[in-house]
Amino acid sequence: MLNQNKIWLILRLGLGFIYLWAFLDKLFGLGFSTEVGKSWLNGVSPTAGFLKFSTHGPLAGLYQALTGSGLVDWLFMLGLAGIGLGLILGIMVRIAAWGGVVLMSLMYLAIIPTENNPIIDEHIIYILVLVGLAINHKDNWWQRTKLVGKYPWLA
Image (cartoon, rainbow, N blue to C red):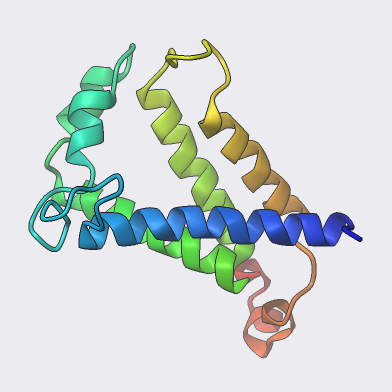
């Protein structure tokens, strides 16, 4: 029977896989959202397509000005990998979850108003689940390590 802890575990693992898969697809060009041969390893910016073609609304100019920035590419890719691995492995889940909230918020602001619903889209749902994970993350092996005991913010 599913209880609250198992539901949070399933949500954590599922979201972790979404972020890690996005990282791997953009890194290697696996042919899903990133075409084969257009990966980061092939020298193609993992953020350029979104920043140049998908942004709209009042902040579009700001986001489009970031197109081609190596710093933005590195921060985005490190964010995807860190969030994905943190959620999947149960390491620094609160940091990973809040990082995901920041990433999803930035992506949401880049596309407001959203196409299918003027207020709520999948970015907001991800944000709500990530906030839930950050707040409700239960004790696990990582939180019982001496490192986290000494530096609780790493939980």
